[in-house]
Image 1 (cartoon, rainbow, N blue to C red):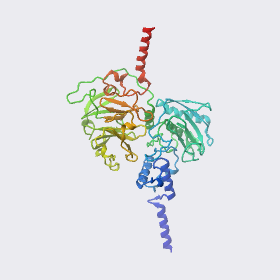
Image 2 (image 1 turned 45 degrees about the vertical axis):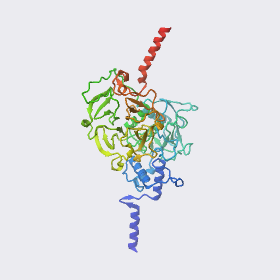
Image 3 (image 1 turned 135 degrees about the vertical axis):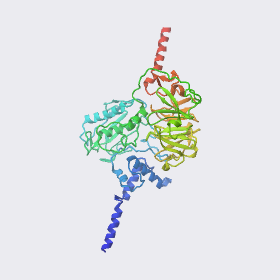
Length: 536
């Protein structure tokens, strides 16, 4: 009898612990599944519509969640550290938008939305009741957070105090259900939520703090740091999504009070992609002159087309042609060099290149091959583009052999591949091309031509497509479409080969601030004054 009891006790102990870690109960596993649906890692299953989840779906979702939080990527629902995330304090905005098979919801920014103006108004509707924060402390913290975003971009803010006037960003402290799809859940877990800019109407940009939380601005470890929370949620109000970087203000999980809180480089780059940099350096105009190239070396001022163009992690821009490349600085094309002498392992005649903002890796493609570099340091390759992600590749379809161009779209962080009249969307988190692709370029990328030569996302936040001797810039807002005034000449505006493309000595492929239109404005004003003198 004693031996039997010892056996039962041993089995109970084994049931409660594996390798020193508690096994996650079935109830907790169910909560974790609901959690992953709520925050976008899984689509909502519906057996009635045969939209159930596979084991692979669940494993990948768990790994993505573990990756987001910096945990070991086991993919197991029985991982205690992962299950514990269900009770962790965090932002209520989902980490992912809906999958292709899920119904789109208003709160998600699938393609990226921004405000269509640079001066936004805000109003603090009410103040917290469950905390000792003073009205002035709330006012000052909100203002400081707005100033942080304004200091690194072109967006500005103006406060409205009239209770009868609607502002762009309405800031409220709420309890329970309050009229939107995200009821406040009381102390702990979800701390606040904000709405993306969307169509700039209604709830767009509004911010709701959970009134049942205890807030603090001086580092009290038992309360929620209002400094971080307001800075984070206002990032959503401006159009930023959650970041994987733990040092980013837009990291979704609450990590406690951070002395000297400031925006991370990841946050700054994100807001500048949406609203541009705050200022433009003024220099003396100096047209780029083209040196006479030795035989066999291409002149980047007279090329019929480029093979590829890309900006690497260190913010340097390179143009490729055959066996050669040049660095494109603010003054245009530089010295022409051989690829093999400066890019280890990379072959001549590449088809496309694209840099992923998340980790700074640049992906080069040629025929069936893929190379991955960080700046000019080889990480991997060559490897076939169809090799699965788990084996070091990307798992791309064979249809993308000999692709035309590739680019990461700032609106959603997805990578897009172009070939002929078609394009494919790649999802790094699902590690595959999204369902339903390829699609026609003409149906989604308005006025972007087919049979492209290259594409890139540049340091001014704009996306560019290159074909032949011309290039096209996309609008930052709304559906991807070519901006007015394009196409333009690559040699003039990128390579700095004529005065036409220079503004104060710098190349001007796209307008980065109001200064870029100043010369044209002065010319127009001068013409008007001349007309008045002639005809008065």
